[in-house]
Length: 114
Image (cartoon, rainbow, N blue to C red; front, side, top):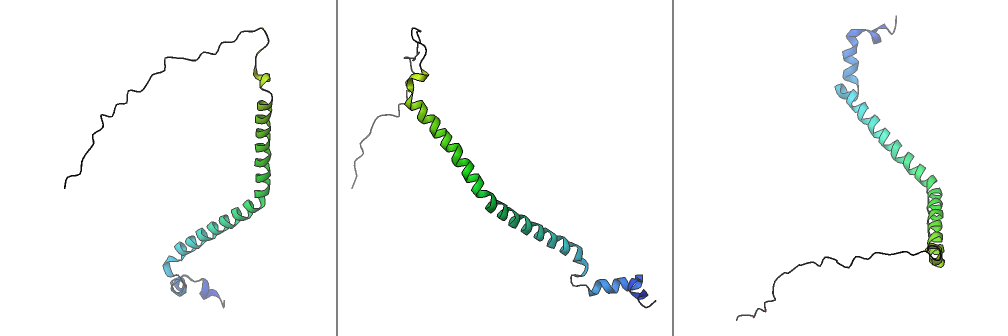
């Protein structure tokens, strides 16, 4: 019976006026939860990226090394790209390329008037 007055409805308005944030305590708690979530996501991603960065860099370096190796092999063996001996290949290069008719106008030499 001693603490009955704490749970009584007529004291609920009194306890809400004592609270630090007043009537806006729900919005303030929502705001604080949002800030806490943002901070947790920020520091979580920071930690995760710091941990994963060496693996990502080594993966990218391996892929780039493979690409350079392929390009070097193509440049070193140009005969590998040619067709079989005795076979005729025709490379068509169009000769009727359109020339641009970009005429701006004629040059006018202006003189300074004093």
